[in-house]
Length: 468
Ligand SMILES: Nc1ncnc2c1ncn2[C@@H]1O[C@H](COP(=O)(O)OP(=O)(O)OP(=O)(O)O)[C@@H](O)[C@H]1O
Image (tube, rainbow, N blue to C red; front, top):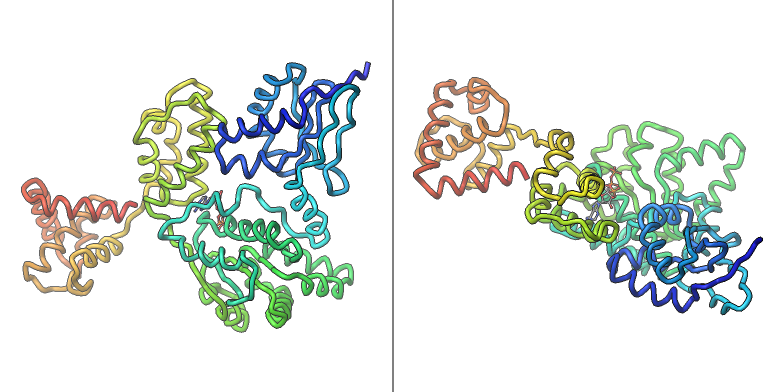
């Protein structure tokens, strides 16, 4: 019959937003709910306009049920929610239905993001992940410098260092920070052309331009950006003509006082098969690394992610100690940590159980096994010599004075406990000592551990430092 009417009004949506903000938490609300523009209800379907498809899918997957539940409480006709990207950039109005108040003008907040999309398309940048914002980035000692540098660049003022080179191991937040810079600039400096793409995409665009004989367009396009961000630059190492073009683009932008932000999995000097002139160019600006996470940072990240999960599973109970356990045991990368938490919440909700240690052990057995830290004897020796403030060469060397012998035995004991090395192997790592010496050392520390609280404490501190 085509019967359609808008029952839930913009005003009611406004009120509902306040409730949603309380339910999902401020960060989630600002990232996901606030940018939604309510377009009306028709035939039982509540439609929201979203700036990007990615966002629509994410909101639908993560908040769809919650939204439907809340909207249905306000308007019992609603059976479904739908998220669409309005064509033509600006959110379109849903047809106003008879008797119902016309929806208000679309939320102005939605506009900058929506308006940014077409420009992005023209430049063929990679889409930005809406979760990767500054306010969802947890700052700790290992990443505070990188975060501060990213913040500075995101202010978009005079270029003080160029490029900003962020590097670090897998899943430590490089992409997150780059997207956060791009989001921030889009919002605060919408007049700037911000282009974010991976080095791989740079290469494909370059190859395509060569093939289609559109090198001039390619050059013009890349030289017209105000801020260029290239993720995972190590990808172009060894790809000669791409490197060449990258070098020219880079120089042109630096000459034009345009900000460049690059990420890599290691420092510029350490990237193999990267031309020296590019290395030295990359080193000209500010090179900062994201250090491996420490226990506190991992716990902080978990706590912030729990807030987001709670919005989706408000009834789930989380026993104290579980997050601490995960932060201690999963020290590889943040992506794995996040995945573990997501799995834990999903599993707990599926089987209707409280999230406790048993559940964590059951449901994350594979991740926990894979994340078992492989501590090396060298690391142990280094940590022990730092802890006791002695030289590494003395720890390993032949001197037998007590001030060296005790730390040496501690290191041997930890090597036995934390690695799979045999006694003879450990002996060899300690300046070619005999395995009976190692055995004696291990035994001695075992005894002391029970009798001497200082030794027990040292061992605990060292073990945590090594495993954490
Ligand atoms: N400090 C942090 N606070 C919150 N989330 C973080 C933090 N660091 C990393 N993450 C999350 O961890 C995941 C992996 O981060 P990201 O993709 O930025 O890593 P990366 O360093 O670019 O890794 P890769 O080397 O794989 O490209 C993302 O979901 C990101 O949001």
